[in-house]
Image (tube, one colour):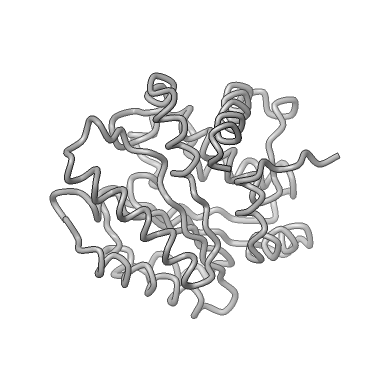
Length: 254
């Protein structure tokens, strides 16, 4: 028996892209998924030797559908939407993916780049266009988790918040699937700052538990929730996910 999705996840999962990808995964032809982003995506030393969110999606898909997919991590630390456009052919088009999860904006909004809103918006629109130009690829835009806004430069915090709203606006304007992680994480950051900081490695990056929560949330949208009975390593993440679900529902953000 399938557990109903909470309201916020249900709205996102209703996008036709998620239904199409679930149907493809159930049918069994090889499905290639590319995660395209910066340090939020790259598997590197900052993941502290643990799975990141995309690894957990890989686990959920394998447990649910079998090994009918390849997950290709194309994240590179420190990059902006400019960098993603520059390496799109090499790191995305080359693999002829069926889905591309784009998670970008944290560095675009940083003081060292301070990209103007108009350029960031245009870059996102172009990334979506390029994904759709591939034979079978579906773009998926993601907002980040929350940054620790009180502990970063105020100008960076304001630009980050602005850029995540741009991600939402581009998704709506282009009809692109959106995974709005920030909406959920902000509820926890505002209401339970200590619990929020327990998910962070630093002010701008999640730790293993934060990655697990992100991955579990994403798995639900792909029809691949991970049961702690089958994968005991997710027990703490599932408990946390239920807590966040309750917080989101109670806040009215759902």
